[in-house]
Every structure is written in structure tokens, then in C-alpha cells.
Image (tube, rainbow, N blue to C red):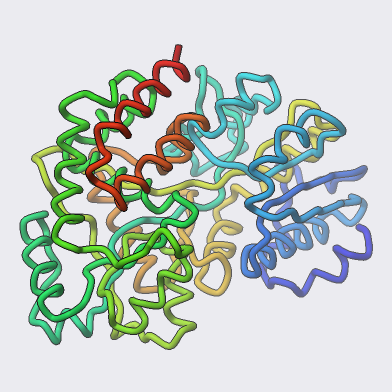
Length: 418
């Protein structure tokens, strides 16, 4: 191991260094080059700890780890996979794998799913499957839902809503109290995608939403227009904070912290920020997005993944690392509240004793009968997702522009999916 990785052994005490990636226990040798986009502080510590523990179990293996900025990686990955490719990279499940699978840049690892190398991943195999093959392994996922100020709900005599009618009734009480119902920051567009995902999945169902993502449904379809009509009812009543297009998702937490907004449709990654800002678990809580129509409920639960580039040099070592990361004990540790603070994908893993992780696990395990979506910018092809999120943000600010927005999105759909 090189000196940088030796120094990082203490970065995260995973307690799994004895887990060998090879079933026969033979230590690895040679090289392993990893490029990771886990650049935020907590994920970076997890990544460095993973590599350190894997290296401790394989002391003759020389591991090179490069951490790159998460947003920058979205535009850098194709070039990285093409020339002097690393042996392992981070990416995302489902359709976000599509461009690199179609270009022949991701290695087919179906044999690992077939030969018993990846026990506990059976339920999520579909998220890693394109063209009948598997192209990587998942290591974490997390729920989306409505995080809210429980103390303000109690002050106003509100209870968690189960239906959109109840949601809107709550929202009117909140507005009448001088607050906004929802914080949101759409400066970087993707948060608007979360609102569309849920409004569409609740209005038309998970299967319809995925048909739209695959380009099989026109954006001017009456069912899509019904989704926008349901969303507009919230916009027109003043449910969202003002000027949200000026805020990042982090900046938009402030109105919720200040009690100027009571809720936020967001992923579980927001919880540490709320806690660090001083809110206690007695002040915040979580509920599943309410129902609209009588359709099986789908949920956004983005899944992060590891892949082997098809141009990698050390594929056997890379496969061993993927098996290590996918193992139950490793996933338990890296997803704990003190680490990623998310949910393990391996069915044999344990969920950390954290209120929000436990609620999310229960929801995804028992009450997502429609299916699990990967999020707007992962389920839709990149060009469609980009145009879509621009349109969704514009709709939230200028809902009267819907006809023009729909026309542009339909023109994009016809071009992207031709």
C-alpha cells in the first residue's frame, strides 16, 4: 500500500479488515486503481476507510485512490473511462448506467451475481441490470420523503397527512400562520425533479412514471398534464418559499431552521445538516409523500454504485474490491449513522439505530409497492433530464408558462428517444 492509504487506516474504523474479498482467503497482490466521487467529508472518510481496510486485508496489494469532486465527476467520467481507465469507479444505478453500458465502457459482472460472489443483493439486482446483464454493485441507498418541523406541527395542532387533501388542508393552516409549507432550493434544478417524481408517481403510478422516463409517453399526454395540475394547486396556494430559484438545497434549509417553512421534500442526507444546525430529533420528523390517486406507491431511493471500467487493467483485483464493498458486514458499517448515514443495500446487513434510517427502511421495505425509482436525473436519459429539470424549475416560478414548457419537453423527447 502506498503511504497515503496507510495514513488513512484510522480515517474510519470499519471493523471489517479481516473480511477477505476472495472466498478462498488468499491475499491479493499487484495494483488496484480507484477513482471515487465521494468528495464530501463524511463520504470521503468512508471511502478512505474502505480502501484502508481492504488494503489491510491484502498487504501485498498496491492501491491508488483518487478522490474527485462529485459534481465535476458527472462530466469527467466518460473521458476517465476511455483513456488510461482506472480499475474501479463510482457511479449510479439504473438508466444512469445506460450511456456507459451502450458505449462498452462498463464491464459486465453478471458472473459475480451468478456464482455466489454477491450474496444478499438479489433484491436489487434489477437496478444493476441493463440488456439482461449486470454492470456493477450497489453500496448504499436512501429514502426521500417529507421532513418536517414536528414542533411546529404540534403548535398548530397538525398531524401527519396520508392523502393530498389532508396535505393541502395542513398547508392552508401553515400559510395562515404566516409560514410557507415547503422549503426548497432549485438553483441547481434537481430538487424540482424530486417534486415531479412524487407528483407523477402519486397521480399516475410508478409504472407510468417509468414509461415516461423511457420515452414511451408524450409530455403532452393528458395524464402528465394532470400531474402538473395537481402540482400547480400547491404552487397557486403559495406553498413554497419565495425566490427558491436563488437557493441551493443547503441554503434553502435555513427557512426550515428558522421556522419560516415547516417541511422539505428531500433525501435523508439532509438530516445531518438539520441536526448540526441545532434541531433535535424532537423537533424534526418524517412522513411518506401522501397519496393522490389509488395507484401503487413508488418511492425515490437513489442507489450509488461501484463499477469496473471495461478498459481496466486489474480486473480480478477490482472484482475482489466490489465483492468486499457489497458484503453484508461492510455495508452495515459504511451506512451507519456515524458514516454515510444511509441504508445498506445488502439484505443481510443491519440498519443503524437511527430514527430516520429506521423509518426509511420500514417505508421502502413494506410500503413502496409500486417500485423504487432512482430519481429524475437518473431515470431519464441525460439530455432529457437536463431539459426536463430546467422546465420543472421554470414551471415552479412561472406556472403560466406550462404550455411552452410542455412543447419544448415533447420536442426534446422526440429527439432524444428517436
